[in-house]
Image (cartoon, rainbow, N blue to C red; front, side, top):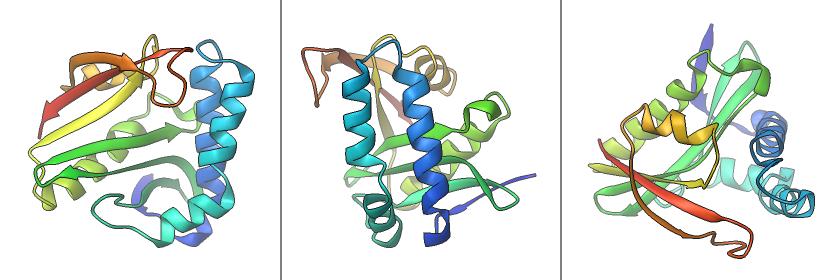
Length: 166
């Protein structure tokens, strides 16, 4: 049985693994290998993730993890971008555990946190052509709003912005 909880320091290695492997699997056909490894190095290293587990606020609500026993099989996090607007910043699953409802449970945990903080709208950014993420978000009520340059590497790809009322 899957349990979703706020991440604790003992979950850091699992978060790093799930996010790194998930990022590689999601973007292998959309970004260069160099770009992928740079993002993983910058965002999914033990030190940064531990800091993000131990230090949360409305701007970064911390990580939620999906646990199967003691194993991290998914991780997600978001934050508030204004008084009534939340954003999902990250969500990844163990690639062998897709289509089990784990992503929905993680999204629900982040959404519940943001609602408790006053959010009525929720946003997410998705890389253009990300056929793992786009169908997931659209099936959960997110509606395409705009296309913009990727914030980290505008020359390489575009980002799609989606939102939903919560």
